[in-house]
Length: 305
Ligand SMILES: C[S@@+](CC[C@H](N)C(=O)[O-])C[C@H]1O[C@@H](n2cnc3c(N)ncnc32)[C@H](O)[C@@H]1O
Image 1 (cartoon, rainbow, N blue to C red):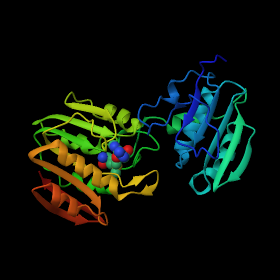
Image 2: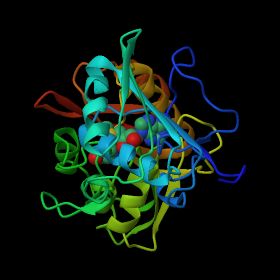
Image 3: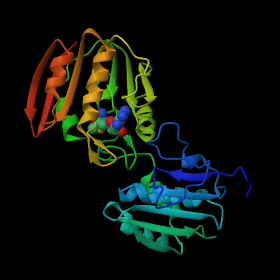
């Protein structure tokens, strides 16, 4: 194993629970600038530390990818809160052929192993959790991406109310491109930028929307360096969870960024869960705001800059 072989880091494991080698390379698709585990040559990495994701198919996919990337004998530590998949990691690694040491600390299960010579079921776990065209909606998607195997009910409601757009627009938190696909049905849309913080969503959206008018941006909508100004319209179903915890300020920041990127008269179309407090901010930042509909626990806003 060469000294330049990577140390794998996945997510942000609590530093008081596990040591992270200096220079470890971030591989989570939710961390901007991260590398893809799939691109690390097989049996090359020196070590792996992973805050394992809660979704079972997604977790097994990344555990399998990490094991495939590790050199034989290289250490892997995977941990997660007990109630967010942590209690399943040991059995999952054992099923891949690993011998594990399973400990408990600060509500986490911390599972250590080394990469065995022979692995079992890796190709199957990777195929199940990989980018794939899903039979329920026919779109490209991946386990772990928002609402990966069904159209979200809020997005479905918004789809029923979107007008025919024209000009340049954006889809904030575009996911696999459900809203964008509908927006691009209009021949008078000249450009649409899909922005998402999840690299997997952007990769799926690129496959779902083979349209030269679509631009794809793996980026954080909250940052001010997104090079979009004077847009004619923005559509969004903004997130309201950050790392599994409800965060109302996320959607509010999306609305603030939308106001900054629209031209005067530009339109924002937004769906939100009924309990989310967006009205006051919309009224402050937009010249006109209307509640288009409320149904099934969601509300749809149309706001004009
Ligand atoms: C409620 S989902 C909507 C997805 C898609 N528009 C749909 O209708 O199915 C919100 C999306 O925002 C993305 N997201 C979360 N935080 C973000 C951020 N700070 N910047 C950009 N996208 C973000 C998530 O990855 C997720 O795909």
